[in-house]
Image 1 (cartoon, rainbow, N blue to C red):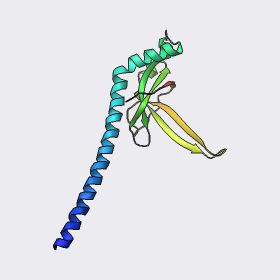
Image 2: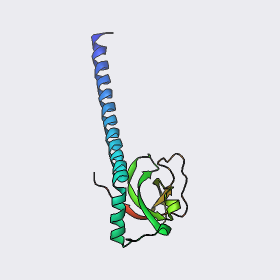
Image 3: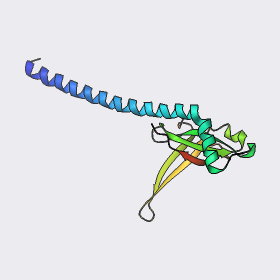
Image 4: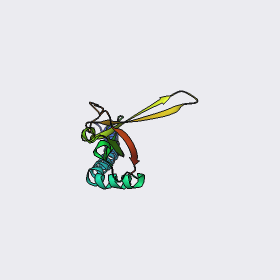
Length: 144
């Protein structure tokens, strides 16, 4: 191979490699943030839950209507986005591991964006199983 062809080949390889590294770095940042949210929810969930209950006046919740904080999963990419407080009977609440977020759009009156938050029994969006009798009672924003 001549010197004229080697230099452009090396430059092209370097540019493509740099682009792949940048893309991988961006993905790593997203994964790390998602992991940080998941860890924060796992570790501080009970304290966040008590704070929400104090804020909303649910200080003496019963087993009939218990609450807990779980992460939100995006259906688009499966990454952790945040957290929510869910409520319902303790038996059903024990089954909830996350809340799946579904988004859609309806072309009515110029367009309406819909977001459904569905309590599910796993931290995976690959096999959704709704937990009946459980609803979302509060959204939680976690500053990273």
